[in-house]
Length: 148
Image (tube, rainbow, N blue to C red; front, side, top):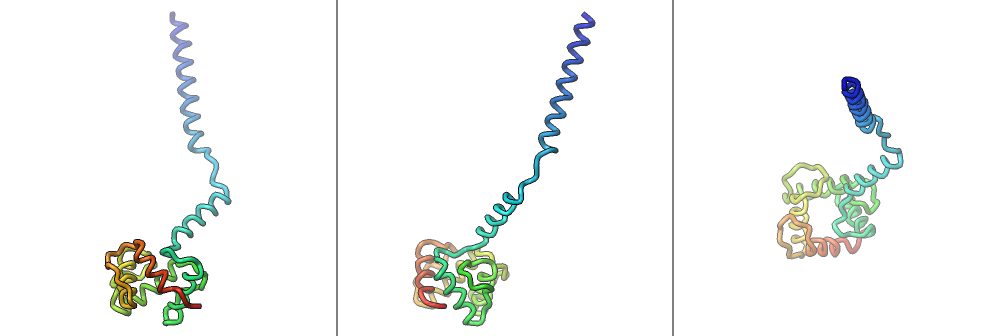
């Protein structure tokens, strides 16, 4: 009986050690992300940082040219409304008294409200609610019909 108990304890101990070792190896030995995976993740972040609000590349370039031509540098005219483009827009809106938040290039409700107010100054009839709904996107599309 003593030999059987000793064998059972030895087997249980061995299984416990093996299981603990495997659990540790599973987390500690995980392979790092490949450079392709890291680049894909970076591209996703970059894509998320672009907020064209329904504009295609040509109309987004028109918005960037309009910002540049009215004295607000949006950075590269590439049709991708990223942080630099929106910082330029926020500076313009702030100068017009439509925006009182930080110049961060993030398109939040304050930036959308300022855009809606600005579009209203140019003939739109939008509710200034900070939501980039279909009407806001349509007016933004129309505003950027011509440019570069």
